[in-house]
Length: 415
Image 1 (cartoon, rainbow, N blue to C red):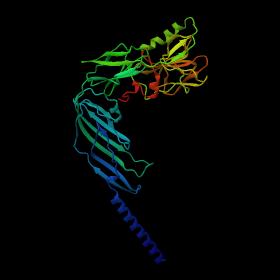
Image 2: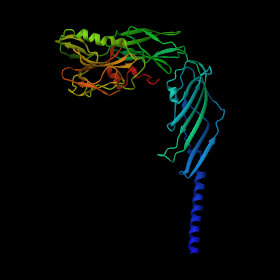
Image 3: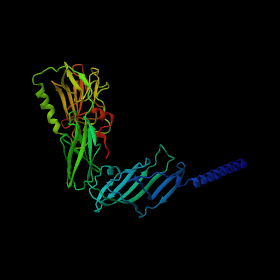
Image 4: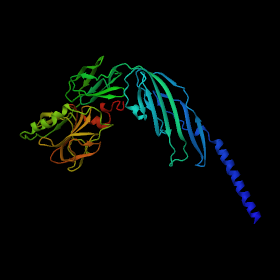
């Protein structure tokens, strides 16, 4: 019996020695290469950690190795970044962040999660100070990953100069051209004098963004526009080219007494109203699964004579009862039935941009309701053709580029 106990003890001792040796080997092999190797990029430069504290599992929860470097006073000098607002890109491993941005006058410009930096609008030139801490917490789903934090400290100089640029210098009729105003530090709001239509501006991290409607009958040739914002007065030139327009046979519309006045009273006041911010994100959605049967700008012929131009996309093949989708996020500013256009829904996407959906047999939303891209707002009918108009103010533009994600509405969208 004693021999058996002695043998068992020897086996246990040997196993402990082996496990201890294996643990020691694994511990020694666990180095800083187990720490995250990717670091945030700010203004095109990768930031260098000035401190960290990490825990790396060696044998699950039973053995861990710790790596620590106390934060020091080293400040990474990024230099003069000129007039470009520096973009901050975080590594994928970062689960949490703490950021503080100090302005040249010593005030705290941004504090809290790094997401707050994305919406910050710079209002001063000069030297800025940035501190950033990124965390990866222990995860039960990935217990083998290291957990801990890196800290960063950087300084940079901003020297923004006011200027305005167009998303393109030449645009065909029916398109939207974005105007991007940067370097505005005195709190002024831009205005654009142009014969093409009313332009709303929205604030961005780098200044302001506005959208110029080039409707189907805009005069071809060069259009000189004057942008004013504080001390900035700048002339911009946009060359408008004629769009190729299809010729489409059409039926004469029934003359319904009072229908035109009803439409004007309901729809025209919407042209001058809009939410200040930008509610859309990315490409727009087609309101119907069916293909458009009449393109934007088409010449509509009735009995061989020109009766007008198409100011939207017509979905004449939309199945009765099929869903009509909201083209983008926004607020419903009109929902009802009009004698001229049937079931009608108007969605405000902000910055003067609105979607007008005409010809529905059912309206499934109400005024003031918030909708998201793709939400059902009604149903098609065989009593009317489904028509989708996209307007900035009172000027119609072709919805097709916005649906493809290639419109001026998507220019530098996240700036």
